[in-house]
Structures are given as structure tokens and as C-alpha cells.
Length: 151
Ligand SMILES: [Zn+2]
Ligand SMILES: [Zn+2]
Ligand SMILES: [Zn+2]
Image (cartoon, rainbow, N blue to C red; front, side, top):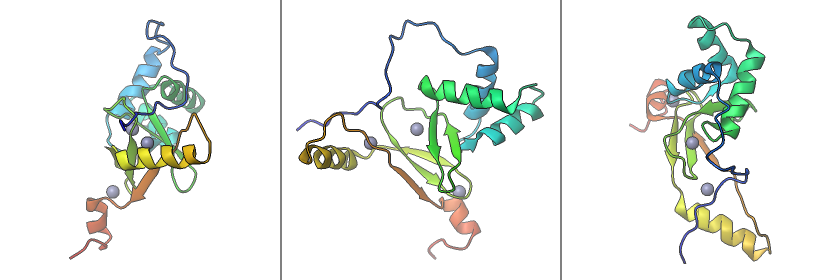
């Protein structure tokens, strides 16, 4: 059986539509772009202000939501419920392994998981199946810092 790559369940509009990304949106994007880590709206806002961008936190939230909706950013929720953002290289469906401490994120493909999620839901009679899976841990650098790295 060939493995289908699931699109997220948001509606994909024709690519010919004009971009809604404003200059300020581009500034938000470039700040997000400058780090491998997932970051909160507050972090991104602080960095924009530090770079001399006169932008309010509410505006940053709005841009982040828009960019995520546009498929330019990935958003996920940390264990303490905070929404954090990152720009991934892959536009294909993927998952993230995220460091709990520094929030560094790595994109991963999990073909076994895709198949398992699909067949489990199909066995229960579900169609239009989607899933959300994020993996959290301590990255190798943070493991060394906290002394939890294997000897
Ligand atoms: Zn991603
Ligand atoms: Zn880390
Ligand atoms: Zn998946």
C-alpha cells in the first residue's frame, strides 16, 4: 500500500491569490526565520522591538496567526500551554522533536506513525483522518547542561 502524505485539514486556496503578507508581516517572518527554536509571540515581539520595529504585541499575534494560516509558519503548543512558532524548511506534512528547555525544533518524517494513525482510525470507520503529534525532550546540548546525558 502506498503511503499517502496527509495534508493538514486547513483549506488550501489557489496559489494565484495575492499575498496578504505586509511589510510588518515580513519583519515578523524574518525574526522567526532567524532561529531554529520555537518561540512565543512575546519572544518575537521583544526581538522586533529590540530591532527598532514599532509594533504592538496584538499585531504580532495577528501576523503570527495569519502566517500560520498561510502555511508559512508552524505553530505548536508546549506542555505548559503556550503557543510557539517556527518556520520549517519542509512544506510537506511532518512532525517536530522539540527541546523542552531551549525549544530547538527538528523536523521529522514518521511514516510508521502516518500508517498507524490512518489504519487505526479507518478500522473504527473514520474518514478524513488527521492527527497532531509532537515529541518533546531535552536536546543533546541541554542534556549535557543539566547533566542528564548518558555517560
Ligand atoms: Zn514544522
Ligand atoms: Zn535544548
Ligand atoms: Zn503525521
